Image 1 (cartoon, one colour):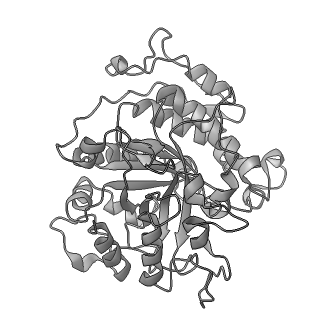
Image 2 (cartoon, rainbow, N blue to C red):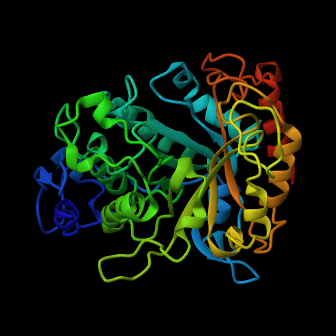
Image 3 (spheres, rainbow, N blue to C red):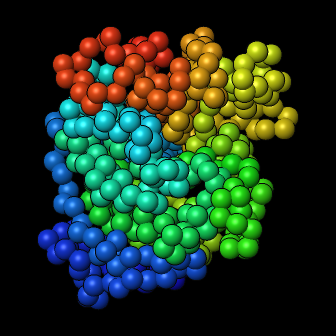
Length: 422
């Protein structure tokens, strides 16, 4: 990838912190071109933030920069800097272009840490939806930058999520050569973030949110404009793995050991497709500190029971896949390090069927009741009043100080209680 090769020559040293727009030994990097679109010079030369001081006793102070290591049974999982398994639990934002952005404040990060007992927040950077990142880079320069600062002040971890959803192919031109400006939005975004935040121990990256079956690009932009990128089947080997490898090449050129999380096929519901096919670098070596995501909504994705709900997966026993596996799917939590970066207490639509009983079954599995004894980290969807019954809040007013439990929905109260369990 041309841009990654060019950027790899730049210094990643913390000694460059005071030199806005500079790369040691090579001067400023000009705008570059990937195999798909362009990367702005402003992203390649963005000022590197200095390392923060985290509050004494906070999660980041205790656990440091996270890594993927093995637990007592030899299974890969998320671990502290000294190799002890950890479990992150917290909330995900809704789309920054919608009203839930009012909740993205420094005071609310303080409330999430002190009142909710959360140790991570996930920021969902939608790309091509109305008013999304493709049309408003304030989502990066304002919300992401602010959250990096605010979560550091609380000693919380921050998961920066490239929110692929529609179109569902992360290699789509909409993400890699946008019709509005020809920019490789994904490469530009991760160039900016990886360079700017390389000294921040509390940052993790989600490389693509929910890769999914049909690419809507032709419907949105016409049949002929980007025919080479149109692929109605979005698979791990053809679409998701190449995207992750290209983003990892960029990120690792700045931050060699930051934890990155790869989306998986079918709205991040098929991590089993990754087994035996994990991302590798140009030399064919598997990347370290890499995890894979699973998304579920308890009323839809469970043990395969026949529930009358809007989105059904009857007879698909997702829980067995993770707990102990079956003939067709080996135990996922014994074979892959998993991070549940998004989940809900309801039907997959988000609008109906609050099921705390089924959510409890998932929580037990993720607390280590699985053949790999892997403890799984998670972020709940979502820290807003949007999206239906799965929303944690009754209204979006941007202020939770002083904290009032009356703002919590039924789902929000359930999550609040989960966060206070040991």
